[in-house]
Length: 142
Image 1 (cartoon, one colour):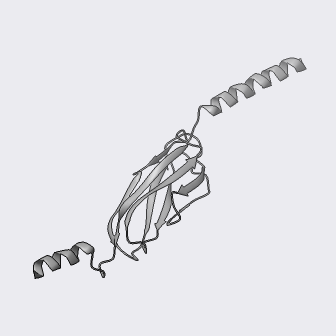
Image 2: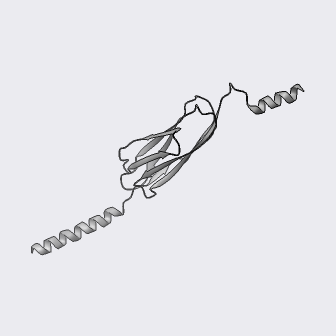
Image 3: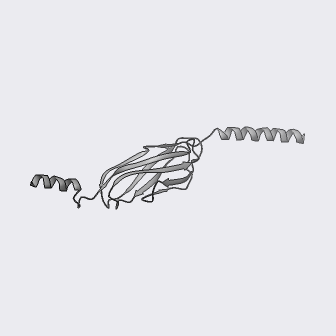
């Protein structure tokens, strides 16, 4: 009798474990690229990637890493329940006058465990004259 009970419990636990494994988290971003466009030096460099857990299990983001120190990501460490939304904030250092081309790698327990998000744009300093503007002026003056 006891052996039968253990056998039934064991089969039940295996069945439950197999069923639980079918449920996965899925992360779906509104957009995987953010275009800053052309922004001024010193402008607010914070942007937000929004996502939804479209899976059937809680989503846990374990790591978000930037391709350089000029971009700092932040995110909620709490599990995102199925159907719930979340966000990853990215702050780019706009004191650097140059084109923006950075990658933010998101690692989670989702069906697609690693996702590369992109930010792009161009930081300019309108108080400074560009080399092209100087060249154009000298051609006009001649």
